[in-house]
Length: 305
Figure 1 (cartoon, rainbow, N blue to C red):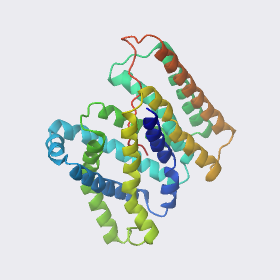
Figure 2: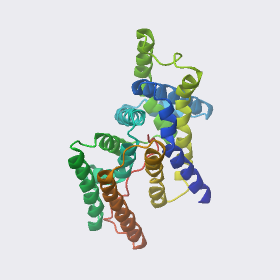
Figure 3: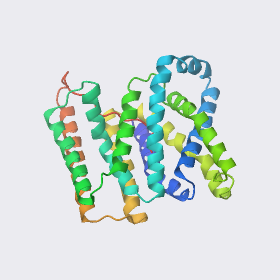
Figure 4: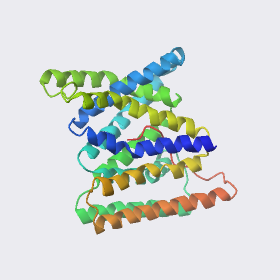
């Protein structure tokens, strides 16, 4: 299990450090970065499927109508998530992205109740209520809905909900998702090149290589996570997942010096309190004899940020 902890830890630390990478690529429009991330991720994952000898099985499973329907929906949600995240980092909203991933597990629990008929234990409603209070408080104080945080939480939560019915493995599933987005991404990037707005091959060698490297940046933590998740309990994985938004929070405040006034501190503190209650309640429930009516834990999937 020790190896699994280090693998999962490596994945979450890399995801937490993502702002460094996307911030350097700030001169490149977010939509173009999304296109490059899709294209190079697909090519890398497709190569992996071929080299691992899984192409025949992948083609057979992936072309089933039900699979295409599920993964098309997943592709849309993860594209929204990736685009929102990259745009937010480029425009100085790293704190909002961290808040989104802090509240995502609680939103996933709500989706389980609404769509999977899971039942919550009484004390599990407390952190959900607190998180809602925190978000509403921030909206009232700033007179604006924290749309970045909510978009990240909702898109990733819906992505997880859809993937609950998926049957492909982690790498194969993301190969299919990026494959479904591959052609639109190629067409869009070709259009930007012909229209004179394309950044690729016009932004210097470093940025060009980093655009290509977006595929590697996406797949490496994915592989680490998949390997780690098979070796450690889901409860431990749920605790480790907060490393990602915690690192992003530190980067946003201490490295990129984003505004963090008292009002924002109060809003974040309410959400953090919700997560503490959520974690403690889950720990105590885990020590008791499992009940048949207990809900399934929050969905956690690897394709973050």
